[in-house]
Length: 408
Image 1 (tube, rainbow, N blue to C red):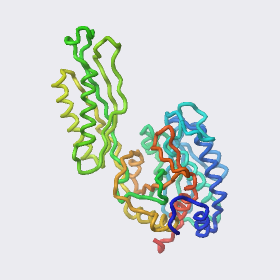
Image 2 (cartoon, one colour):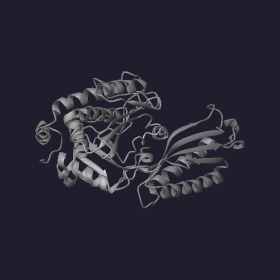
Image 3 (cartoon, rainbow, N blue to C red):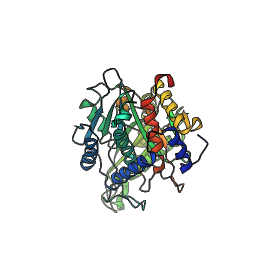
Image 4 (cartoon, rainbow, N blue to C red):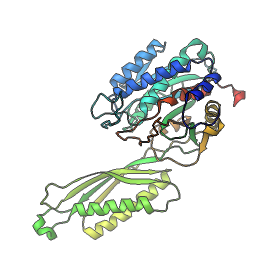
């Protein structure tokens, strides 16, 4: 495929030539319609009831017998035979408690809730792929049994464990897993981490205890807000200047404290995040933060209690052989120059790491640039991605599922 910087119709025509058995225009329209439905009617973690019913209906019409896994999670199996390995394809269902500010014609109809992380698009591609491979001609080409996993509560961090506790990786046992995401990078193509594909992620909770008094006699109290401000300075200093060998992120996201404008605050609570490449680095930064907070205690007289998740969400670790296979599928779809192996860790977290501890897997990133060139980050009220990526993402997954061994 020739070099390109977006997803123009000419490139889609080239892709159609590679997949003459697929009606890519029709599939693109279908995925766009699915995505816009999910985007317009988002639901937060463990409240994905309408989303689950919608997916259930589509899967049933395609000939599946979808099963509920937890109240809102779903699983659907396409069975080829015992001689085939089973691959799971995971799609997240939940949205975020974010008020949308995109101005899209299909913007969220639910105030304060938005698909601001691309889960709507992931659902759309997974659902259309499930319909496609259920058709006899395409089913015949598959080299796998396929288990489609529609997972609730990815954003809240507990969906994977709920699904695993319910046995989603068994009956049949899952031999491989594919998860995928979209990012609004300007360059097209796919990007796959060589090994570590997400951060080890934990919650940071800090409680600062002072002594309240009237501001007219402030010297008789201990100002928890001042101690909290020094705490934030410590966190920021560690985040910006601590020379850890590998990338990490430490930050405070919320601060709550004080009871009145004329009262020295006796209590402040701070919450944030710590993200590192692995558990060892996570523990190292945690120890440093504890030491620095002890210094703030000595300076201010406040009592500071740090609570750091002792069982953080682990990093996703890609399987080398599956990385090679996914890169080959991507090279066939996008061209070799647009199927890249990455070594730079992006500090996102994903509880799908727990799946990858039980079975080998690969995490694929699809570049989905917006036509207007805009790039707003995940969880932003203005986040959006380019829907032109849909046929390319679907074809990459289809290629992966149908590749002959000798093509690898």
